[in-house]
Amino acid sequence: MAMSRWSYRADQAVFPLLMAAAGAASLRHASIRQTEEWLGCLLSGVGAWTFLEYVLHRWVLHHVPPFKRLHEAHHAHPGEFIGTPAWLSAPLFVLAWLTLARELSRPAAGGAAAGLMAGYLAYSLLHDAVHHRRATPGGWLARAKQRHARHHRPGARGDFGVSTAFWDRLFGTATTIRCNGSRRRGR
Ligand SMILES: [Zn+2]
Ligand SMILES: [Zn+2]
Image 1 (cartoon, rainbow, N blue to C red):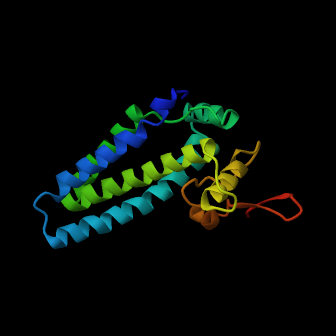
Image 2: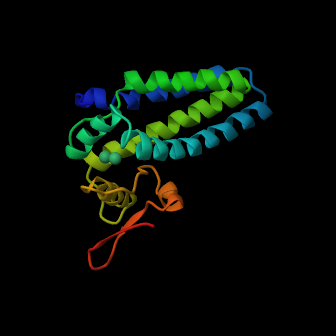
Image 3: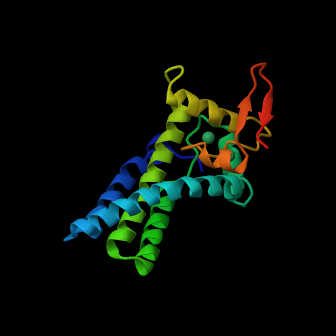
């Protein structure tokens, strides 16, 4: 939904606080082995987020009402501050943390939740930068901007990953621009 610049970027303040809370709550009195378990789950959570990002973008944001309509507004006006507000996203991640805590140990649940949040925060920062920041030509941000610009082309059905192109490559939805400028859809 359309937001002010500050609401749009509230994620960038809220999620570091949530991650700190997940870290503090799950690492209090933790042993070395539990800390290692926490770190392993943190990395797994980041990886899991990249897959979730792909799934949510490809199938939910592009097909499921009312998310589809809201996401179409973002596609139509990519420079505007249209996205998921922190008051909606943050409780969902807390719910994920509580759900994980029912199944896993305290360090594992806290680490996985912090990893999911770190992945979401990275996605949020990158998607903001892709649409609102200048990039050094040839740099990683320029490449991310180019990949996401391909996704924003009218009628495009690929390049759903913002944080990474890995899942697009795996599922055959990565697109490329040929040397002659024509566009090819990946498989
Ligand atoms: Zn999209
Ligand atoms: Zn976008």
